[in-house]
Image 1 (cartoon, rainbow, N blue to C red):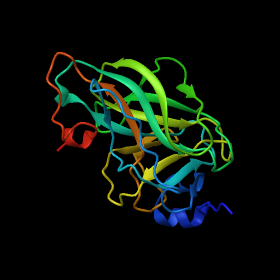
Image 2 (cartoon, rainbow, N blue to C red):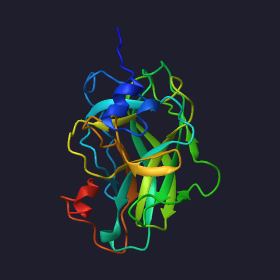
Image 3 (cartoon, helix red, strand yellow):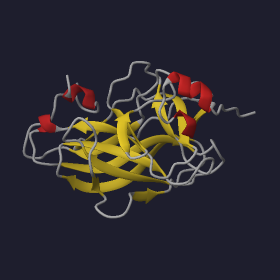
Length: 231
């Protein structure tokens, strides 16, 4: 039997999670049946990420309208005036909290200050709606963006479109050390991601970008891991 745990509001309030009363967690530990590896790409693109590739928890809002989660990325060391975002990627699943894909919104936000700012893409509406077309299961979902981002520091984010349980969850990885690049937007305020008091707080959200063509590429040790752009 598939099991899950919806964390009680009282217990989560004691843990100090501001949005704890509005979140449910898939309580099955670690990825079932192995980890779905991202597809390979040509040498003209690379992937910005913070997660280690292995899912620890899946999470979903009870009332998802208006709430976002996202990772900040910094491409300033690429020495270019803009970065072309090709794809938004998120690790999710269709089997929890229901048994189908429901769809979600995606967006890119400015990160010029110390917290995420206004939404840059899409310029109108409340976000780009995307419904996975994959077979049922667990793994990486890719959403086409193909947009030149004018800000080299930005946040790639996901918004749950429908209320729980008719929704597709977001995920955090198995790294218990918070890398301080995952964010939540809840009740009108951006804050560092808080996953109900447990240590797993690094979102499995990535972006695929195009390398600048007029400047040398980053070192091989940096390709595919935006962390190298910070340290």
